[in-house]
Length: 407
Image (cartoon, rainbow, N blue to C red; front, side, top):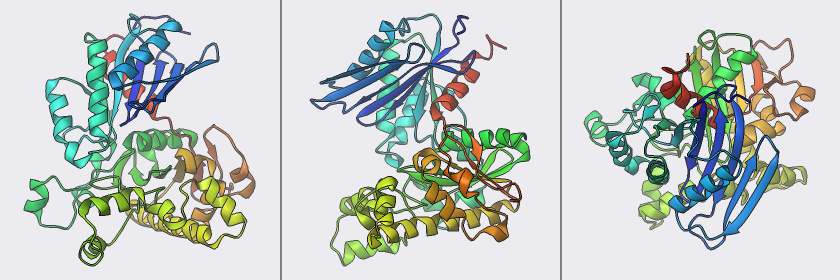
């Protein structure tokens, strides 16, 4: 393990009631510690911390009242392993921020103006940006001398052309309210598209990739030569693919219909589409493992939910194939994409004319390594690429704050 000064990056992903964290040494991109604080603000908050080098895990349960208390608890756990926040080897803290709007197109060192802009974007990311802000402000109080770097989920998608980013609504209205397609999961899409190129033995600028980030939230992107040219999520993470609890694409008039005919309020419709739709709305489960178990037992409701999920996925593969013109690879990532072989097989089935195929034996292999699951004869590679958003955040953070010190 490197002992050179200031090569460590602490990555924080602050959710509304949780904080995920990783401490990495960027001299060799190794993990030193990983952990999670969840149920913040509840009586039974939980902290799980793993010191990677010694392969030891500590767990703790009890009340953690807020994010400040959570980060102090994280700092205490790190200190027990000799990795405290007061270490001179800590170069910066990198923060996941969900929405950067059009303003932030790259990782950014946080100052008062940056904080104000992230706050101004809360109306378009009400569930995420407030928690992200809390994490940054708390980290600032713990290490005010240390650079805090915001890495934005939307940044990778800011290369989309206006023809992909704009909705076909009145321009003045759209501009006044910042209504456009921003896209999300960008940190994952950036990492996976580059990792796919590496797996193919090519430079990112020479590869066209369709990335399918399939977790409880799900999104697709068309990446041409390392730059995003289209993505499935839009103004919010609601648009696009069928997700665990989100509807994805929907006729906008459904909202008017539910309000006028169903007597539902805007808040009720918001909750319906974001929390009670997608797979859970279709069959009562949002865990693909459980859905596949039910499918295997002949459950028709689960089968229909699976079929709707795959149908939407195929539509996006086809659409992004058309957008890119030439496709070198389709990459599956995130919890479902990495682990659910039936999803990968079904998504590609019938697309042989597009050069896509899956080898059933390769597809059945379980591994945490990047790998190809397409047969050698396939014109388009099909890959499984475990995503690593924390490493991507650390890499971008270190590139920003460390480039002057470590060439």
